[in-house]
Length: 300
Image 1 (tube, rainbow, N blue to C red):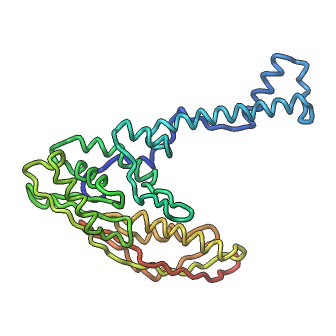
Image 2: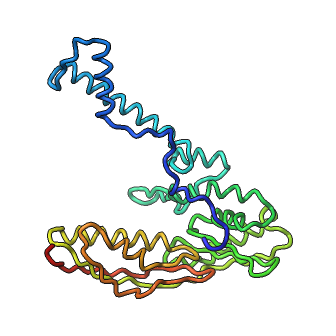
Image 3: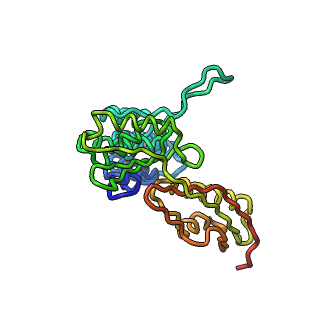
């Protein structure tokens, strides 16, 4: 999101100290040492010994129990919880997971409902604290804007002049242009008495889309299956394009090269774009197409 407003990047948080690094061999060695200390007659244990097999079973079962403890720790932290565990954390903040596409029981087989992803939901939960203010903070407008409709990917709020607020909306559909339905939902939500200060005039509009394409040739080292390397680069490139499809996010050549340099790639010849793509306030860059070709490299 553009502007000075920032939130904690949960994806950058390290795992807490309460989460153990588990190793089967370490657990097994500790168990065998404990057994020998208690019963010295087992000091000559070999792997073929039935008692050793019992130790292996016990060590594996302990590994599972300790892994379950790790999972339980993660399940109560917003940065690491998933699925219904994350839903429970959201409930503590009175933030429900948004519905993106309703279920359709008339299809064969019935089509299940589609909800916002864990990562999108995870980002809105701590952001909800901004929604408690009635002072019209940037974070408050962003939170209420994101929560107004399930098809919203990003929201940015700016104040071009005192008392004037412009809210830009990016849709998750197509190139990101927000539909009239989405804009109406955001407008209604942001202009309610519980959100908008009396002194603010709020304007809601779609983000302006900056289209670009990516054309590159991958020169491969001898040996790797070209189709596998190309597929990996294509997936990484698409992920990068999706990640920067946000309001105010630039597209950098360094990011494109990083995505393209997958294992097996000797060199990348990037022909489009030829420079960083910078977007201004209220704009979002959208990748309209990716063209990847492969070529054989030189022996090394």
